[in-house]
Image (cartoon, rainbow, N blue to C red):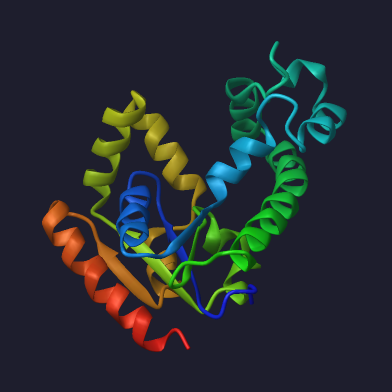
Length: 202
């Protein structure tokens, strides 16, 4: 469990709307600790994970600025499970420690850890009080990612296939937000859960 008295693990597949949901909770006074943001900081120019990444993968996986070459690394880990495991062994403990430190220092009404791979990681479930999954129809999810990231459908489906299944994610969740029907509907669901979390956080 984190140092905060009440912590939510927020997760969802790519394109489900996790960031939008996190922003809505932040507007209501929750502290958001986003592991994607932390990960980017770890692999930014001369970030704390970069020496270990260069040692494990070679200097060609750092770009001219000293940041991780994301395109090169993405191509490698999608085609090589062992390389993916090596990268995760470098990043995940560092990200987890930084996230928990940020959560322990939080001053919001409660803490939400935004962790895209929360279900996959296994260790996060023991560190949060409840798991909140953002869900949407698969076709909505694909369309959003294609429009946002300018990726072909086949690549979006490959990314989705690398994540836990929708059924597994929903089965692991204590709370679910359905993000198919627009912002007003989303706000109503977030407000309902915010009031619940305020009631049960202690």
